[in-house]
Length: 215
Image (cartoon, rainbow, N blue to C red; front, side, top):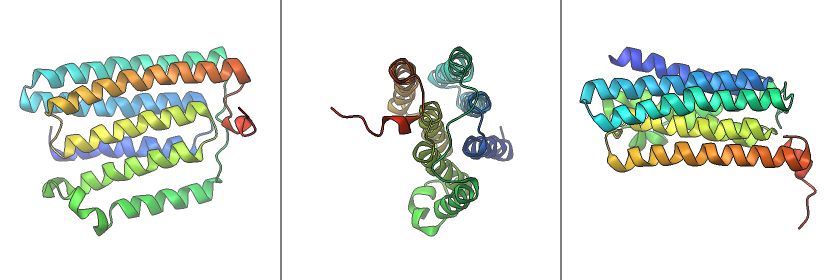
């Protein structure tokens, strides 16, 4: 796959993260995460076709099955089961959120990160965009009050890290591939247990209701 197509896929990933900041509906957030994961899966399949690395094929299939199909289905089932039609609000309003998104994106493209994004000079712009995706995912975790949105933010951060490694030419590293598999299973297990326990004990996924908890 040529660099323009890969850039288009990364732009979709970046766009889905911005959408996750804006949307108020959990259902739309789950679908957006599925689309984001599909783009990552396509990138990994592309790397496999270029390198013929069988382990990359396994990783791509794993990402597709777990993150593109199973994770969104689980989130949608959870939304319907507990009638979670809308996401909990953000700490910052939409205009401030968009300002911070623009600031973080500009910061990721600043010369301060040139030693990191310049690992492969030809992909510097793409690496900067992947780094911006990481920053926005971290901001999503911080800014959202809903546990479901925070979990999706964590999984989105993992997708952004994978995208960065792909454009940094590190996707063929065996340790990195093992790390991707580990993250997929661990984060999804945490998501299932964490969300289920919160709703069971508090009857809500709004994390602000837990501000006054005591030992």
